[in-house]
Image 1: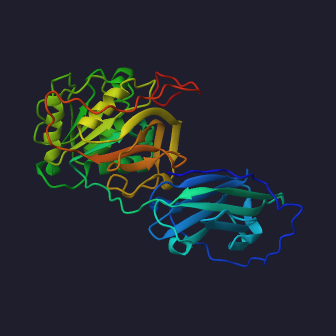
Image 2: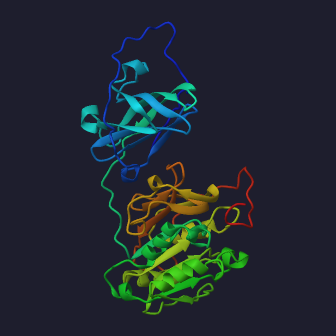
Image 3: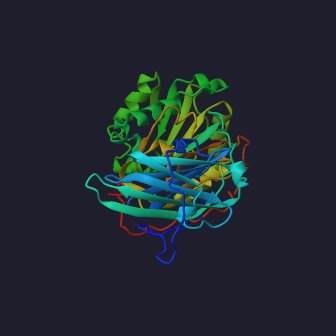
Length: 408
C-alpha cells in the first residue's frame, strides 16, 4: 500500500534561512522501468509543472522527476530515507541538466537506505524548470512510499480465470490499437499442458441476459475486429447462449470461453463443469463492467469466489471514455507479453487477493483493472455458499451514462 502526502509546488527555500550547498554537477540518469516495479508506482504532483514517480525493484528504489510540456528540468534534487527530509538544498542526490531534460531518474540502493519490503520511506523531489520562452518555476513533491515485496510470479497460462471489468478493449475502437489485438492473440494463443491446449474453438457466451448482449455493445458487429483477430489465429468462434443450469460440459475442442456480462447466477453443477474444463488446461475469461451499467457485480464476485479467485469487483468506474493506458500500467504476464499500452474505456476497479495477479492498472497506476487467477479445480458441493464479498460501490458523480459501457 502506498501512502502519499503532497507537498506544495512552486516552493522556495525559507526566507529566514540561507542554505549552504555545493552546486550540483552532471549526473547519469538512474534509468529504471516502471513496468518492472514490484508493486504500485506512486505518483506525486510536482507542483503544476510535472510529476514525480516512485517505485522499487528487488534491490533499488527509483524516483523519476518528469516535467510537463512546455517545461523542462534545468536542475533537480532527490531524497529518500527513513527520516524526514530537510530543505532541498540538503538532498544528497542532485544534478544540473545541460542540455535541459524532460525527465530524470534517481536510483537509490535499498540496502543503502536500510529498507526492506514493508518499510515506509520518506521521499522528496525538487526541481528548477524553464520553458522555451524563459518562464521560470520551482517545484517540489514530498510523501511516503512503502517498499513493495518482489517475487510474486504470474500463474502459468491455462487452468486460469482472466477478469476484465470492461468490454471496450475488445470492441472495434479498442481493437484499433495493435496492442489490444496482440492481447487478444495472447489470450487464446497460450501453451499449456492438458488436452485443451490444442483446442481450436472459442466459445462466446452472451446468454444469461447479458447486458452488453442486450445493448449490442458486444454484438458480432461491435466485435468484428476482435473476431477477425481470433479467426486469423486459426480458431472457430461458436455461440453458447447459456441459460441458468444449461452448462453441463464443454466440447473437447474448446480452449477458451468468454463470459460477456452475465446477469444470471451460475449453479454449482455449472461451476463444476467450468472447473473440469479448467483442469484440462482451459481458460475462462469473465468480462464484467462498472456499477450502473452492469448491476450484476454481486453475481460476478460470487462466481469468482466459487472458482477459487479471491479478487472482487468494487463497481467503481475509472478512466471513462476511451483511454490508452501507458506501458507503466501494464504488468508482465503471458497475456501482456509484447504490449506497450492498452486501450480501455470506463473500467471497474478490482481488488485482487494475495494469489491473484494484476494484468494492468488504471492511468494513475494505483488501481487494478484486470487480473488473472489460477482456478481451484476442486468441485464445490451442490449446496456451496460463497464467502461474503465486498458490496459494490454506488454510482457517484460525475454522472455516467448507464446505457453505455464507455460511461458516455
